[in-house]
Image (tube, rainbow, N blue to C red):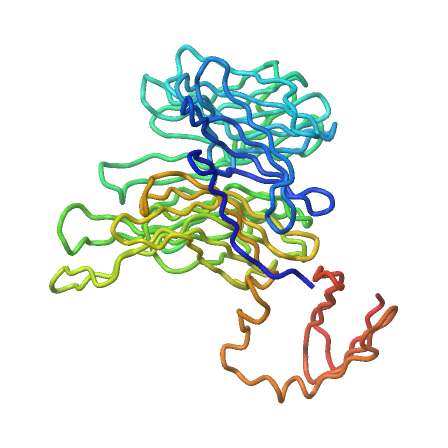
Length: 477
């Protein structure tokens, strides 16, 4: 049985704090990676911590730049467990704007810090890291002064974080950036992400194209494939990125589609977006299923992480903004909107199982912004999501960390998420029998018509699924 849930707020008094990624390791220990401020110097440093399943901090470490700069991490920038039992993270400097890699041992003690200066690029966003047999592969994007666009790059690093080679994609007329790297074997890899451009001057002219780059460990490009072009105002987008490899060889990732919104108070046309989770074929040439998360909302709605759950489904998390309700005739704001973090669970068959939005501070005069950066599940099936909160009201203005834990049904307490929607299933359930229950080796299920059977262990983990049964099914456990 999964555990009950809660929201844990991390307020370090005069110190700002935010969580940008996490790992769940053995014994359900939650390892956090984020940033924290030094109240004496106002520097943003790296914060490393281990927490238990109740959100209590067991141990923590802080590291600050010796030259007085600050560390910055993009939401869900890679934070990985290394083969030696330690940890590694990538990010960029706040002022110098160069990328960096930081390596820690199993206790979180610093092993090395490596910065990657670039005299030409305006800004580097260092977001991806993968360990393989001969070191590390990292990726990100750099904004160039010649066109102000962001160009994707891939680096191979040795085990000390030193650059072996760097592959830059210097396209023109569009942005390109990667959101995931996948190891096919120790010599071949995929980088996947969108490239974006525009056919005109309006937001309706913006487009994205899914890109899949295949390369080897020497930095040779083996193939560069592009999907179909999609615009934000189309009914269904085929953009899929931030992909996670499914055991069946298919891919699950995030997408988005847009809708124009005519502001009743005048001004330029704004855009609303609808978040999607998609499953694609192995070659990215077919969308197997697409799930819409909520309705159309703010253009700032974002999915930051997609991960498999302990019971064989998918978890997603990010930001979900609910727009203000406005009287169409008078323009009067009837209800202020709010900026929340969202968590959702999608079945491996492409059905939305549940979705929830959470806030800690609900203020309307200057809305607090709630961000969720990463999600995962404990062995019990409980779901954990982490992030940070930019609080503007009540004062003082500051950044805080937060952790949300629910049971596998998205509830803080059992039964909060009824699945029947008011439909009475009593007559149907009366037609089924399960024998013996509890069971050890075999399970006999009989029922009317065609049905599916799923078996879960005591921790809520799915151990068996049998589809398309008719009248009777004998399960060998």
